[in-house]
View 1 (cartoon, rainbow over the protein chains, first blue to last red):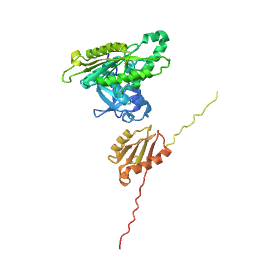
View 2: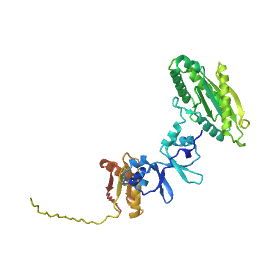
View 3: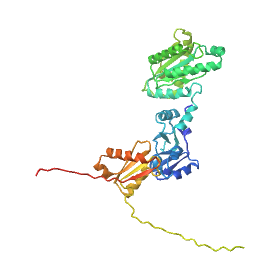
View 4: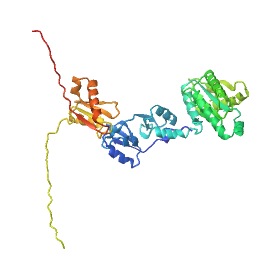
Length: 288
Length: 116
């Protein structure tokens, strides 16, 4: 569900001395090595890949071909955490170490992006539901209160039947854009299922209600390209934790909150005036 | 059947001797971004041949990567001013594949008037 770096990094790397020539290092690419960890006096100077090697004069030494930065990270780092790091600095290499501080692999932005692409919904460009668990665990670890928003498109089955599934896909795509536009940068919506979207954020209940209201309104006011008015319902489940109490089963808590929010979205459909419903703020220690 | 006479083959040898310059880079070395020797290799070379006599200044330029300059020059003129001069002249003649060696003579003329 949440892939760790140890499963995706390239183990085909080799240690080379800072004075090794670029020419000799390029020859090592043919032997199947993807990355070279450049060292001097037992310390790491940086990482080289074909990208830097092919840009450098073959006569240069490895220390002169180094351009990028590197960061040493534990192998238990999740792909999402790695993605967040490299999105800010895509030129950085991640040197992955195990518990004994031994280097087990190297990852760069292209490897991480490839791994992440499996979690991106191709139609909407939003993350798939796996991301919710990563977001949820991070929020639960770092914050006292979190909220799950669960969005469902009203009468989507009928729309598909009346206007066809291609037009249904256009609606899904436009709603995804509206969600991206109306959501604060620190949180992201995921495509949960067919016409369902969900988000977990470190927000208090009131804040998440305001955000849900804003999204419901922006979708109602939007002129969809197929010329049909669309409305959505959002269910909200918030949870507050006592930070002094240890939590063990994060996945169970997140599942419980998603489930409650989805039930609230069904209730919201019946509340025809605002399409919003919340089960209030729950005690996380009780649902754990 | 024709007979062939064997010809002669001679080799001419010319020798040119001159003193090896220490340090070999004189006053300034301007390193292009794709030059065969990078600033790190140049640093190692000057550190071995002339320890503590040169500074390496990495610069942000479209095709110049670094300037290696004799420290003594920077004591006479500020590094910023001298660097500006070096880049101004180097970029007119070099490209990213080149290394330029530069000799720089600085004369300081002082004139003072004293009361008799």
